[in-house]
Image 1 (cartoon, one colour):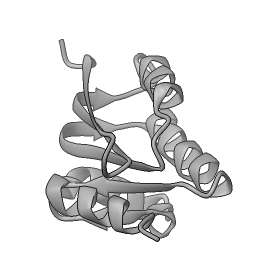
Image 2 (cartoon, rainbow, N blue to C red):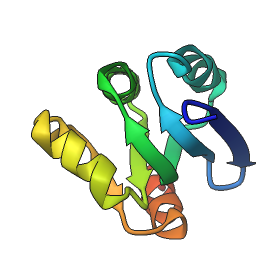
Image 3 (cartoon, rainbow, N blue to C red):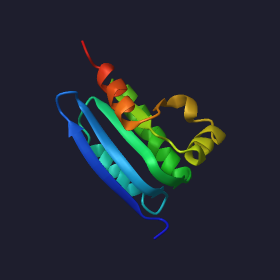
Image 4 (cartoon, one colour):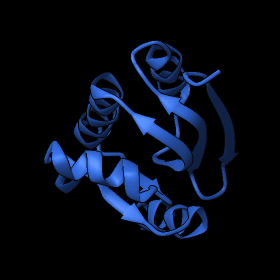
Length: 119
């Protein structure tokens, strides 16, 4: 199905980083499941791996922005990993790309998110 979204999660409690790997499209039809998973994250660092996301619509962008703003206000971090050119073009086109921290790979993003909270 073209509008399906799969979310796999991984937690590194030692580093204080959770990773959500999204696969499919982040759309109005499935954004609620993504928002619910975001609320379950209780680590200081969060990586959202978008390497397998082929499309994002305005509600998907809104959910990403909301997650970033909420985490920043709470003193937590969010890093977007492996964002495809297509999704990055949408983020740039809506001028929200400047709100996010990006990493080329999930492992790089996990390191950035963990380093942000080392004493």
